[in-house]
Length: 518
Image (cartoon, rainbow, N blue to C red; front, top):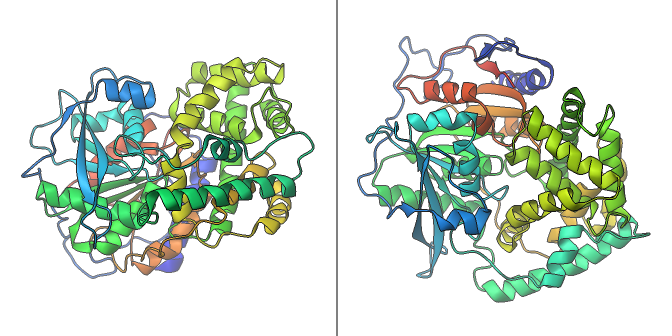
């Protein structure tokens, strides 16, 4: 089983990177292994497919209200046309032994066609983005067809999004961390030292501000918040969609509450409980590929970046690193571009708009790129995200090791190696939570949606799931997508169709590896 699973996941990534699908709908990908018995007891000899657990409509619901001004204030966006978006807050214990509570933000998306008695699916994107913002992207993308059949409820990672947020850094600390201390004649060692100094001061200040709950912002806590929602709803099981870093929240829930898991979708997943060095190495390679794909597709659209857009983008990134980009750093450039790829229109028109912003910056006009950077900072530069990310970042290399990592990674990832290494310094001096336990078995086989050009984590991190899923004796179905964006489900109606099949009463049938068109 482990070798079969490893081959399947590796083949899924390869298929996403190399196969161009011209026909609409879903196409069958390469066969990666022999047929297997599918269902709750993989490897068994059952002659009839077992039924999957039922998902239920909540007996009791949250106090949903129109989001209206909340979306404008939090995200500077409106609810997508034709989609009803409602928000709610519920209280969760800060930790299992505390009477103190924290407000958790939730958002529900439906359409006029959503059946009243359709069971909801629960979405989390961990610390990559507020889950509510990820759901807005889904509701405004090709995957919104799913909402015609099921409500989706996003639960924000505590300290982020629409719930109680964290405010514990000084502006000076935020400035250093958000720029990775870029500037003229600053080498890796100098930048790492300055970022590490700011990070340690921030760790002390956040610990003082949040004490005694400074470690209560974590994957473990996020999984408990999902269980709190299930208990409020009065349902037996949850159907979970873990997007990006949210895949770790979903797997932690599966480990802690195996009998309460009804479906498990890992969309654009990351490795589970992987050491910081290894996870970052995979991420910088994957994001490099995403940027290269963007540049290639920009050239195909005859955008302002020209035929060698990757060279122009790298030149702008390097200008940011050396302090020659009107106050924008290399990290801010990368955050601007990757967040736009993740959430914005990546049709030829949208690609050309982003390409023009980068090309203008290369010629000294940073206005448009600065707007992209401000939007990225509002989503990904919050104190709550930093606290949650640092609490779950284990095995961090020391500051003195970062220059060596840049050298090791630079050959494969010249645009992302430096920023990826320096991002590890953001958490210098922070404590970390206990490692989340992995699921020993899964009540249902997972559906894995692999984005070949995920701009936040890349697709290489999917390989790091192999050991986790093998140990849980899982037989996943993998769907690959070669488009640009964060969350396959948000961008692909084909993937939404596969999810419809997965939500049925019977286990999914072969093929175990599929692909969807970009």
